[in-house]
Length: 71
Image 1 (cartoon, rainbow, N blue to C red):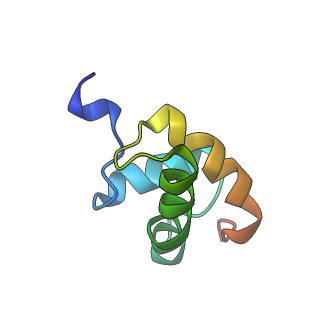
Image 2: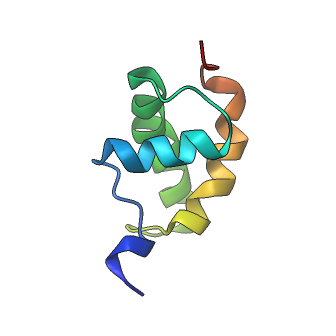
């Protein structure tokens, strides 16, 4: 697997990509939510330290109600 297959949580554009997939605002609040909450839920449930975009997406979908809508 290549590096770009894995989510780099420090990159805003990667967080924005996942927010865009679920139609949510690409705001600092939402990026922080993905980093502080969704990331750890996914890593803990999958028992992994690095996760792919494909693995992360279902967790973003699950957390969609907690994310802000676009203005």
